[in-house]
Length: 381
Image 1 (cartoon, rainbow, N blue to C red):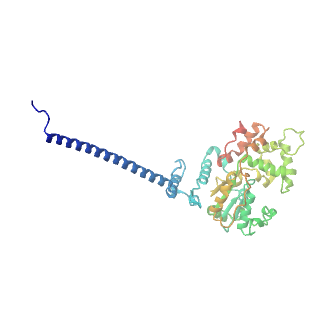
Image 2 (tube, rainbow, N blue to C red):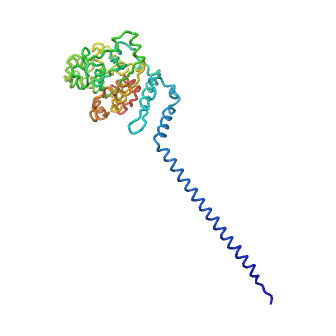
Image 3 (tube, one colour):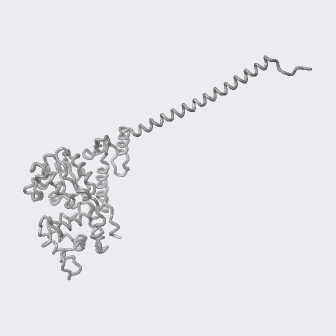
């Protein structure tokens, strides 16, 4: 019978080959597994590196600066740092925690003014001559090269106190008597109108210039309350001369014997022919005329425009930009006093005709648009 089994040497060789193939296959699997682990490890390291990079304050600050300098639209925006006028260059303040704060909001406010000033449709509402009336509103601090345009009913008393201290009339804000702040023979605050034309132009071109605004309708309410209702400074001419003049001209119900009402005030302000009465009232009208008429923002290039609604941030920023934050502080702002009060505005305009409110808005539209205040559609429609 023929033996069909292979020789022992052949079997041994076959086993060796099988063993080697198995070992080689396992070796490749281990290499593949090791390679996978290596790829995962490198991916984790790379991810960690990316995360740390984006959390790095220095890297984030550089990104912020780049966005600030390039994110402006092409239409009328300044492109790149080197093109900013000297007085408008972004400063990039660094806070104690290392955070970089760019004054983008202040740049946007100035850019908005420039754009609105170029709008021909609003020219009658945004432009005014730099007359003596305007120059009388601008107070001068020559020692620190500062000009401040007064916009009454927007916390201006406190800013006048700051300038009075800077001019050296009093050593601190706390030392200034209240009856001296608005006494321009005693407070040491010269007006820009007191200088020659050449000196005026020099200061307008080289000094740090600022003023403060607030919602135009809320400012009118504040003026009405302060001058015709409470009258804390005992200025009798508002109640006994100006109020009767407004009532005679604008009161609808001639049998009504009450003192001046906010409706009378609104109808007077919204009358396109209000100027003949303004002339009779003289400079007392500064408490309710437009910011345009007071400070000529399209004719004078201001350094900073502060907003009453953000005064907690704007006041320290203005002091720092003017280089005087180490010399004086803005007085403490009571909590909530600067917040826009829509309920109060609605209450005061309740019962006033839409026609009268629309005429009022038509007069103050320039102020709303120049300073970015929202059109009060809740009153107009």
